Image 1 (cartoon, helix red, strand yellow):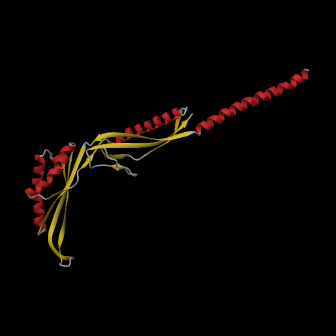
Image 2 (cartoon, helix red, strand yellow):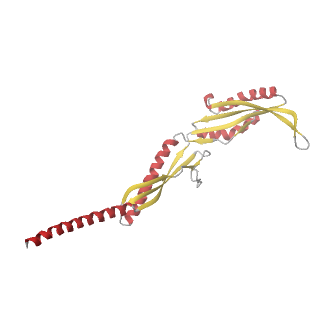
Image 3 (cartoon, one colour):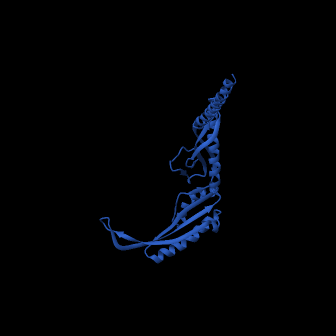
Length: 243
């Protein structure tokens, strides 16, 4: 009888070990299964921004029979331009002049081909007008062509409107997009009786800076410079574990 009891002990120990191993295996399997269950969502965030730097570029361009007369005419027009800008509230520091360029203008034959004979010379000088008052830049861009009435030939380009703190706002808007992705994933998980686990991966989309209320979008991102009022949009694709 005693030998029989002694033989049962090893079997009891073995049985207990098997039960413990089974529990450990099941828990490990469940943990591994749970970790392989993920949910992928797209989060987005949008923020309105107002440009705080305006740039207006253009060129003074003159043409005259000789290079010297073209140069002198350009020199004569510059003070008129500077005076006009000053009367509209622009300081000398806000006006930047670039190097003059010149080139000959050749005669065109009756058949439409350029000949080797010079008929005139063109002198031009690019100018950039910068101001933190973006509305002043917008206003001058509309009015400056009227300088032709004062004998000044100024070829104006489209104004540019920049936001100087764009680097900071990009970080902020991407963080908000990631938070939106987490909130979306959490709601989906709860609706199925599960809980949201840690983030497995995240991929940031390109930043879109567009005119306000615009639906413009590009795979390479948009950086609008044509409007004062803009909106910046960020998108994040993220995967989370569900438990």
